[in-house]
Length: 419
Ligand SMILES: Cc1ncc(COP(=O)(O)O)c(C=O)c1O
Image (tube, rainbow, N blue to C red; front, side, top):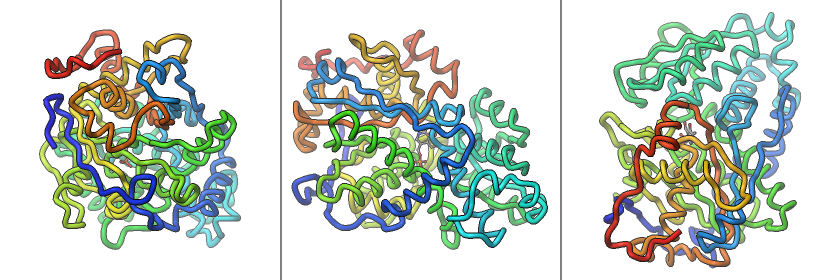
């Protein structure tokens, strides 16, 4: 559906009392697996749950009961959630090489002199819009191993530098993200390196599954934090997607834990890289690709090829797929940077803030009332959001938040929009 705001959405059929279909999402994302993942993450020096903030005044202003946002900029000091996936996947991979089970694996063991002697020199290779590559590079550094990282053209200097600072090689390529993924595969084959990619393809599924399992830690933490806050079960969760691994992991875990009480999941993508939205709309059940430059300020979401494992989960269970112009992310960044009342200020980057930007627009735009009603968003709604990164491109962050870049779209048909 096309909107004057430039926001497009595709609604899934309604299932039971919550929205989405009632079938199991994926057993590899269940509670028992997540407990194992959390145990491994706790073994990493510096592990702390990322804070979950309650935005009381913003919820009042937008007309919902509660808004909770998980601030992943605190994750191991790396300014993004991605390290949860990279650490667990590399941990599993090296454990297998050492012939030990995941229960026996710990971060300390993997970085011990004994493990290093058995493993020899390992080089990990990956493609990234920034955050995943930094996470792989950090993990390699921690374990005394090597990393090579390929980035798409136009990558922000700060993101490239953050990778190089870990001692990894970082190369900015001439192509887009999906081409960088293919290059990293080719380099791995030619050099005997190990690919650690956050998306799957035929014959390459273990590592992307482990990466998805790694992301469930943030959903588990969020449920524990919600329980403490007295609002244990969110009604809606907004999940931003690149290849869809994060969204499918969080959704799959919530569905396996909460069953019929699970929230409605809304998938949010940038227009120029809206491969999940396009796949849902085409509706033949298969994942579809978007190509071109994938130009968007939401660099972490600039992926044109869905992860097929993630796609199957989202195809069957998400309530809606929404495709957004860049100003929606910019609106979310500004709202979190200058919150109403005594709500906490949150530094949220372009790919972290788009969920809030969309929620705000849905709640205040007359044009999106059909979406609001279909999703049942209103005064009883408890919203869960994940700010998946901080200011990973500090210049762009300031251009948006201070400089007013990407202003709210002028929308004359929306006389009812208020804040
Ligand atoms: C900050 C941020 N948020 C969300 C995502 C989306 O994750 P996925 O590619 O698993 O959909 C990414 C991916 O790089 C990211 O960097």
